[in-house]
Amino acid sequence: MNTKDFINMDHTYGAHNYHPLPVVISEAKGAKVKDPEGKEYFDFLSAYSAVNQGHRHPKIIKALTDQLNRCTLTSRAFHNDMMGPFLKKLCDFTGFEMALPMNTGAEAVETALKLARRWGAEKKGIKNGKQEIIVAENNFHGRTISIVSFSTDPDARVNYGPYTPGFKIVPYNDAKAIEKAITKNTCAVLLEPIQGEAGVFVPDAGYLKAVSDICKKNNVLFIADEIQTGFCRTGKKFAVDHEGVRPDVMTLGKALGGGVIPVSAVVADKHIMEVFTPGSHGSTFGGYPLAMAVGIASIEVLEEENLADKAQELGEFFRSEVKKIKCDKIVQVRGKGLLNAVVFEKGFEAWEVCVALKEAGLLAKQTHGNIIRFAPPLVITKEELTEGLAIIKSVFEKIK
Ligand SMILES: *Cc1c(COP(=O)(O)O)cnc(C)c1O
Image (cartoon, rainbow, N blue to C red; front, side, top):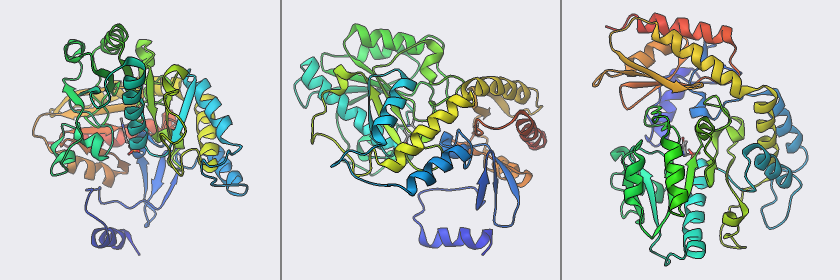
């Protein structure tokens, strides 16, 4: 079967809930992938930052295969000998006292919402059923019913009612709006430190610090969704580190699974996490030994290869090089570390540009029509990044 056959098969037998680029990936290593015909591409999406450590990192693959040969799944009805070491590793890496392992990002967000509501009832004294959580416009936190209930993206929301109540939506990058929206029933503010799916929207310096201060002053939990921005993607361990902010809760996922299997988690201190009691939350696969082995190795790779500093350096290089490209349609180049976007003028359709990039050997995807995200694996070498930039330049300079 060739590329066309695989695409036809997806189209025939799969729900049409995505509109992928017409490329099929059949092999991958580091920052590069190959299609069934053997053509090579740079991967400048990294599965939405789930492949920060690069495709099939040897250390992560070894951890996975070693664990495969020992024990894969136990459920939480019993202890296993990998979860404790994983939780400790994650707590050491994040600086929080406790962690709760789940599988996907959306589950981590759901877990944080449940944590915040319970904390609100049991620690803050909000009447159960009255808890409010403040979120931002243009957020992306996942796809469950409750999460899309507070999305402002019509594509994500339409006809999925009835929607879950208890969420207040305020403009992003506006700390005063949060302060105004807080009531005695507010238990949490949930934000992305940089809005990834919205098109790598970086808030003004000082925003996260101001939000954190407002939350502290009002006894409200600050939940940072670091699922896309965390694990060195933006040039620090976590995007909140750019402002020296310590949220009360962080949701983590994507690169925690090292591009191998889904691994997610919520981290918080004990005085918050302790509201979960036996039976009050759980997951059959959450904390399973295979995921725990992969999670530990995924964090170790980030540390051993100093990927935060690398992302910081290569990110600056990337943005400065893209800014030199002559193309009238580009209005902004933005991002932090290796989470970047090129914004084209309003109304510009970037799909054709992404197809042209693909033809030239680089995979990237547009978001909201006129924005292209560039987020290669953090293990990419400067030479590879330079090659990728040459491809981007050749395509962008031809845009009419
Ligand atoms: C991807 C993402 C999620 C959802 O993660 P899934 O693993 O797809 O459920 C949540 N929040 C943010 C910020 C994300 O980027």
